[in-house]
Length: 78
Image 1: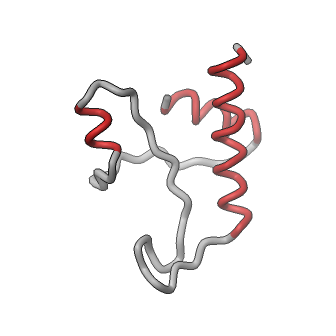
Image 2: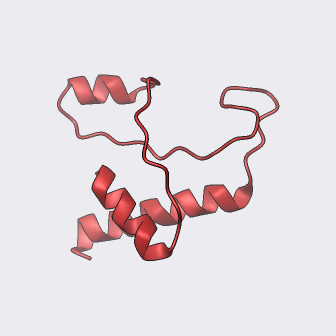
């Protein structure tokens, strides 16, 4: 999944920064159950789970585009 997200971002010309995350969210429970798991993080000037979150809409739209391209490739073969 991670490679697929990176390939989708590359195809769209969107820069990425691969990183591991200590954040478990629900992802850890799914991974423990054997469900493949990856996360797309959207940068946020004030951090996540902060009442003053400051995410740029263009960054969100980039993440949505990456996910969309990946989903199409996974479900339709490209």
